Image (cartoon, rainbow over all chains, first blue to last red):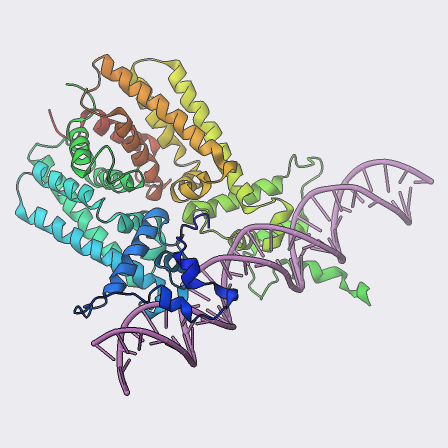
Length: 234
Length: 234
DNA sequence: GGCCGCCTAACAAGCGCTTGGCCACGCACT
DNA sequence: AGTGCGTGGCCAAGCGCTTGTTAGGCGGCC
């Protein structure tokens, strides 16, 4: 609504709707180049991937539901209907983004747990993994924050809930292990503690800026300090 | 000819609209008796407040943008257009909910800071205040979580940003004070720490259940333990 | 010639909101 | 007692607009 980011090469290219004025020249000017050069038959569509990245950028700013297919098309300099040549629905776009993110995240999480070690080390690793995804997967995390309820209600995105459950088990197991070995306090609730850690990390996507004062490592270090030892001096 | 209408048209008119039957009980109680008793001219509309509460419940589940005026009207057993007899826009409904919440929150925050005391006590009080609003103001907090970006872009809701800034100053001031007196560690970033605390608290509205295992006090106690001293034993 | 990428043009459904009117009630006034 | 009238609550109908999606066609490249 408020956006209207678009650049104007589109004005020439799109040449608008009711404008009519002979489409013809339209194409010639804009995508005429296309310049996919010579070789490269574009494995599994290079254009498609580009569109996904454009969509991801918009999702990262406003979330999934708040982004319209016309927003995405505008950003790409095409019309909304043309998107359906590459995707069969708006949801399949976000599916591609989300499943990619979750595959990577779950693989990294499992590796960290399988590697073993002291609970403190494992949890440190998990925290670092999560913060580490903040930059490369901003879109997926934003969508996960804003549209979780909407998406998880659809069976297509059942993997969201499944992944969530699996991750929770990892964390709770590790926290309990730490309590047994006397490393962690007995008077904290494992499940509750996990939830708060999880939320604190992911919600950071709202104010985290890739080029900003703090990078993923700085955030992780800071948070782990507070998490393990608190903000008080001892 | 036209006279014939009188008796039942109202009852029929009540649950109209495509059969549907709506929420039933709502109506029966509603315009049938009307029963506003005798005196009580209903100061500033008692009906209106009821509608606000219904809307708040829906906002608490799905957020503001995801809730339609027809959802609200359905819940009340009336047609969407009828809502505009009480409110002049959908936004004025959420405004009522949000401004009420922020007035209460800010007053409590200011009181806690003005009361003074050790930074640890002040911060404890602030944390408890926030967790304490989770139950009575679920709707406002959910909206604040889901629709913050959309709302803060409109000047009508300028008080959101203003309040946010004021609260941040309170927290940062208090944290820095604690660092100066040697109570809090020097190696934490006040602003960053505040943000993480804030987010952790508010985001709890997603899984917090009023009748559940933990109430606001339980949550506060647990969180303050971890915040001040960490999850490790010492 | 076949495919890829895109346009044109529309669709049905849903959105927030408006307009105009009907009805029941309560108060005031004859 | 009756009449008149204001008012609060709602319905009926539909406005203009946006949403995701579809159908068919056209042009350039291998």
